[in-house]
Image (cartoon, chains in turn green, cyan, brown, yellow):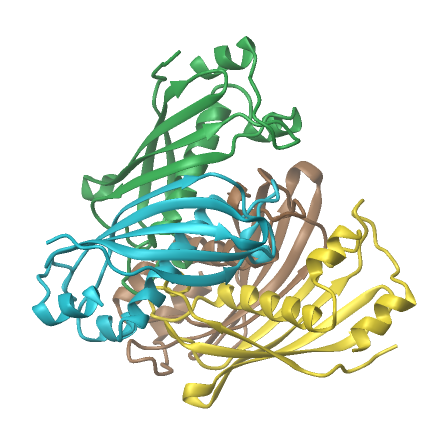
Length: 136
Length: 136
Length: 136
Length: 136
């Protein structure tokens, strides 16, 4: 089953420690920005990822792909829109766009793919209740 | 002009700060491991990336794609093989494989794409001398 | 001249990437939390640190001291109170307390010391206008 | 019982991701450099910290203090000397000096304090065997 969820927008600010000597937010930091965005999307759907893990459902990343169009700079306020673009009982995929409203620019876009995993590190199939929640 | 350079292997160790509460090296850290690997590849070709930047040739990342197959754990020694898989006067692409020899496993593979940029942040065309060096 | 400014409270959330295999926010991340807090304190005083740097006033760190009392966990909302505890034309010192309101606990406290530096990397003396702003 | 162990020198290189827009290795990264240094010191004493944790002895940080004298720059090779300066059955303290040989400079010095903790997160007293190992 494939689905496209409603987009959620997470806002964050580029910290000083995020920048590199080029003056840009280092490209590795975008991976962390995307993670924060999908965690807030999950929270908006009614359950925090912390609660997921407490219940034994982990969501490790199997794939990250990011296209960087324009740099983000120190102190930029970024709006990261995230939505679910694929959802099955064993997998989940998110798509993202990173914007800087102050410069009316899309800075980056990307996707992350995940599998559901139990606490023993094995692939897991989630129940209909989890899918329903994720469909929003 | 497309070319495939000789592979170079960079060795690094998963630090404590790299791990997350799942016990894995956090997926964002692989982006940093790949960066260290390509920087050491460039050094092995005769000029450090620091010298490149001093001469006004910057190499920002335009795309990162990583597939994660198995987790890396704290204190694992990783061997990251990297080679140039695309090279023109304006662009450069690297391919990577991350191995943990102790567990005879490929943990991740991926690519990063780059453009040559000058100090003013504009796309630049590098000379034949740079290409020759990168061809190794 | 020594002074004690009004405290400012910056709120942040412990990200997944901040955690380590012990399940704690890694102690190095607190250094970044404190940085974000003092940057928001400066902003509350009327000028962002980004503007400071644009005007040629840099504030490198000369000393960090942090005492860790209790761990911070994934997804914890932290309240970081920060105030200026020392201010001269050449130096600046901040003191911090990191709290987790949900657990009514002080997790850490600390200080950072800084010198004013110009764009050439030399120590600088700031004017009375800057001091006045920092006194709040 | 207080003791001063033999110094161990750990070598690391400042990565691109470590730098900030000032062109310096970000001060928070030194906390990670020191961690790597003490982990290598422990390894040199005959047992890796990973093995310690597997046996149920954790070593959380209770205090970090770093004085920054000169900046570290991208690609600098740093030599971090570390030694044990305090050792009891419940506590351990390390002292560090960070040098850049190429510039014959001490860049930073500092200490970290730790308590022995068991897997349940409670303070623990280590045995005479552990102390003997740490005395080198």
